[in-house]
Image 1 (cartoon, one colour):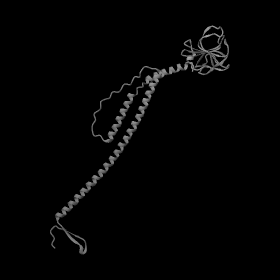
Image 2 (cartoon, rainbow, N blue to C red):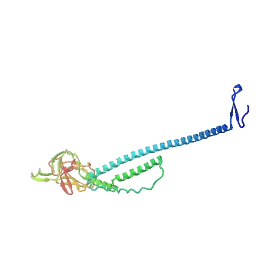
Image 3 (cartoon, rainbow, N blue to C red):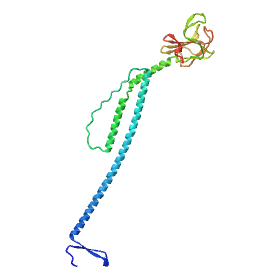
Image 4 (cartoon, helix red, strand yellow):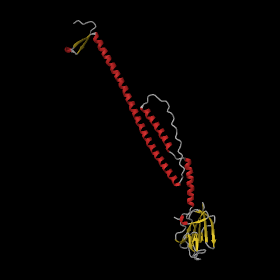
Length: 300
C-alpha cells in the first residue's frame, strides 16, 4: 500500500486486530488546533472559577460585616432610646420639683444648633461604607435631638436647689410635733381665767400630762431662756430661727440651759406644777416674729 506524502499513520490495537488509521496534514493541524482551543478554554474557565470563588468569599465577608454593623446600629439605637427615656424622666422630675417649689420662672431652653451645609460628596458607595455612614448620621442625629430635648438648665437647677434647701431649713425650723402627749385642757384664745373668773386671752395650749413626763423640743433650735418666773414657774424658751420661738412653762424640772443647741424631740424638762397653776400640766406657746399664734397650726 502506497502512503500519501505527509500522511501520518496510526496503528491502533495489536496482533490480527490492529488497524491502521491515516491522518492527513490538514487533519493533524485541525486536531492540534482543537486541542489547543480546548486547553485555552479550560484554562480560562479555571481562572474565572477561581476569581468567582474569591469574589464570593469577599462578598460573604462583606455581608457579614454589614450584618455586624447593622447589629451595632440596632444596639446603639436601643441605647439612645433608653437615654431618651431617662431624659424624659429627668424632665418630668424637674417639672414636679418646680411645681412643688412653686417657681413660676420657666426653664430657658438651650439654643438649638443651626444645621450646617452639607459638604460636597461623591463616588461609589459600598454596602460597608453605606452602613458606616448610616451609623455616623444616626449618632449625629440622636445627639442633636438629645441636646434639643434636654431643657434642664444647670444654673436654674442650682438656684432651685438653693431655694429648696432654704425652704427645707424653714420647714425644719417650724415647731411641728407635740411637746408632750396628754389631754388638752385649754386652747388658744379667749377663756375664763381659773383664778379671777374673768375673760382673758390665753396665748398658748395647756396640756395635762402625768407629772415627770418628758417635755420635748418641737423643732431644732437654740435655748435662749431657761429659768424660773413667778407666773410660769420653770420656763424654757427655744429660738428655732426664721422668726419661730416656742415656750414651755410650769416644768417640774429643766434639763437644758441657755445657749444649749437642741434637736427636734430632745428633752427640755418634765411636766410639773410650778408657778401659778391649778395642777400639773404643760403650758405651750408658739411665737412667730414676736407674736403669739395658735400652736394648732403646727402640731402633727
